Amino acid sequence: MTGCRCHGEFPARHFRSVPEADEFLVAAESSGIFVPVNKARTRFGCRSCGERWEIVVLPHHEAEWRLVPPWPPAPLTAVVHRERIRNRTVGKLQISYPPDAAWDLDGILDAIRPWTSRLEDLLQNGGLAEVRVTIGAPLIPESGLEVVYRKFWKKGAMDPAWWGLRAVRGERAVEIQGIREWSKTSPFGFAGELDVMVVNTRSGTVRVSHRVVLGD
Figure (cartoon, one colour):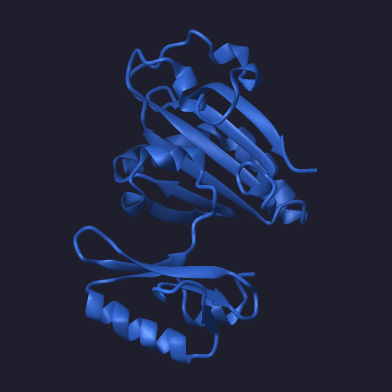
């Protein structure tokens, strides 16, 4: 997918000003690569690969050209302002994280290596299309860990290991999406598997985790 012209000629980028973004958008529209998919002409689909791109204005008037985030949105991004999310590629992983997690990023990735290594192997063998890791905001000490995903799963589907446990200082929720294919029928917009866990950034360990398989 990343070999398509839309990625090669108009890759994701940030702009220093709205006029700079407007100039870029004119070039993108006249390239013949994209077709508008909304009335405001801020979201475009690639004619070749079908990827959707959008241009958004951030709070301090910077602008960003990016792939449209998956819909429904990933559960953990709901607790972080989307315009503040940073993105980084580490090996075969696509990492999204809030700015205050930058210092903890390497430790978190080391802690979740047993999960991501297996998914990267599947990615290498063609079993998955991509692997995305989303790091959430710090958990509030003494709050129940079930708050991490109680809005997204019915209580009966929650791992009992989470019940009654309390968050401690330095813990963050982390979500790993092993995406096989995008799916409109899946509750999270893709088929594959979803891992949700709590990582203690001080000890570099995963305290609890829960996995669900999505799709066939």
